[in-house]
Amino acid sequence: MTLLIIRMNVFPEKRIELSQTISSLSSSTRMKKGCRRCDFCQSIEDENRLVLLEE
Image (cartoon, rainbow, N blue to C red; front, side):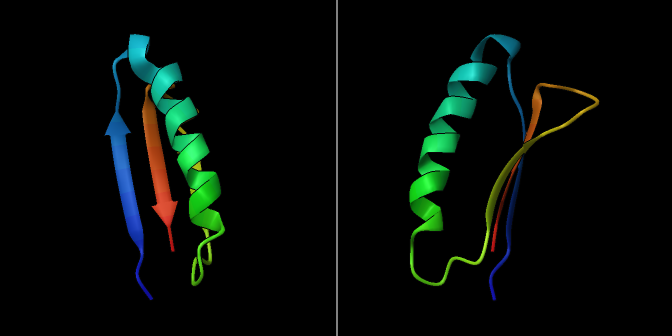
């Protein structure tokens, strides 16, 4: 099993654009053979802190 965790601090003016891009890429990643999980999250404490988790 491979676990990938990417934590990002983004510029406020780029957050929406980055979120939309990663969300669309996550959809195709979830469909790949062997993908157990692909989650894209935003911190409740800081909306400019994003996390991508793939298993």
